[in-house]
Image (tube, rainbow, N blue to C red; front, side, top):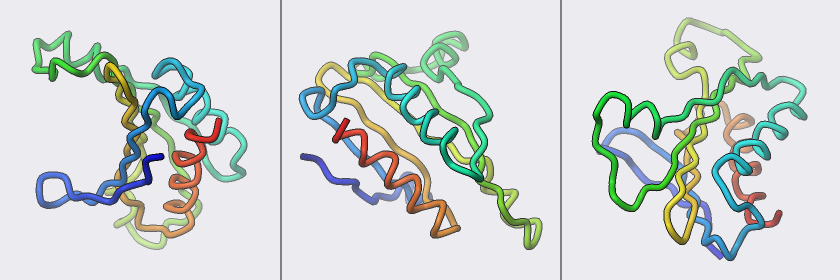
Length: 132
């Protein structure tokens, strides 16, 4: 089974990524994964869902470039936001988990959260997708 991998996007942004072969999960679509993650946010006492964003449709609508192997992409946008010790956290909020479908797998990824509790929650939610 794939493990959650830490990588750096564009030499700057720390992201975590889980690649799930379609045989490693019971989910058949981006929408099913999105709904499972939405439920995890709804179950969390301090997280609030903000929106679902169809990144694929948006990119297509602006005549953008999409890799040939990408079939669907959506983002789940949400916020933990249980503290505002300064203006700094606002720069990295809200949070987003991206879900990309390719022919044989799903890629689920998110940017590192500065709050370790929020980070652990997102890691738990994403890695649990392989077990459902």
